[in-house]
Length: 520
Image (cartoon, rainbow, N blue to C red):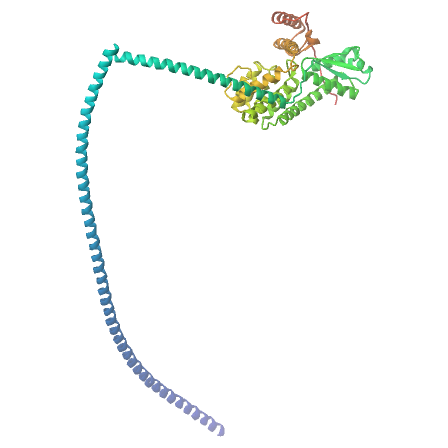
């Protein structure tokens, strides 16, 4: 019974708690509703108050804005009125100025009209005066013609003739005096320039010969050079085109030939063979080829040395090589390269005396005989060939004209060309500078080779023995043994017809066949 009672009491307690919680909830809800109603009422009142204040403030702002707008409108109106008044006053001033200018223009137009009228009146009076003057002149001329017995045209011609004769006489006298004075001054100046240039130019005078001497270590070497049955000496003469003279001169071999390049190649090759000691045909060919390469290098170095000595730069390398080649060319026995260097130095000195371009004058003097380096290989004079070479390698027009005109073939167009002519004459006219006989001799040898080289099948030819023998090397595939006989006869006939020479010339036609193989 106790447990049940306890459970009942608990149940009653729970019910009481639930009832009290419900009552409390209802009371809380009603209180919250009243509080919310009171808050809403207060908020509405405050909203109404805010709206009323806002309306009042808006009304106040509106009135203030209206007042400001009215004030701004009044101020703007006043400013516009002021500006309009100023514009009106400016327009009035412009109108007055325009009216004043119009009145001034009208006054000027009236003045111009009055001046034109006065000028017209003066012109009429001048025309009348001219008519009167012309009438008086006619009367004067008629009176003069009556007194002198000549017409006006005759008198005019007479006076002009007298004046013309007097002017011609005075002009002739003046021209003669000026010419004589100019010639005296020119001769004096020219002598001064030439003497000064000659005094200041120190050049070597080299006279070329047609032989070279090679020293031997002993006379025994002569036999080795000749070789068995003369094979070595024939090979050397065939390869170089130079005649070897081995006579009784002790410990020396003479190389004879008119071409200095061939002589130099032969000399170098022979010296190398003597030093090497192995002298046989194959070794001779090898040494000749080496000597030819050395001579080519020497030619280039000599050309460069010439340009450095003269002080001329920028010349085309091919022209420099041709300059070096001129070391082995002669003109009447005078070394062509030495002559060109001397002409360049003299040209520079003369140009300096006359106030001209010294470098250009030296360049023209150095290149004036450049054609002589190829005139034995190509058709044409050295003047034509030199001008063509200078044009080919884009030389200056003044230099080209100097080359063309240094012998008078073409008219000189510059003072530098005239200077080169004078320098060339000075260099060639010095005592001992040239030998006429040597040039004639070498020309004859060159002509011999040209005649033989023109025949079909000829590979190369050499004039040796001072022009008493011509060795002609033919191509075996083109010329047979029978053809050699006819070729030798034809060459001799052409030489007899075209050349003059003392004694007789031996024509030696050589046909050589070779077969070469290598053992590997």
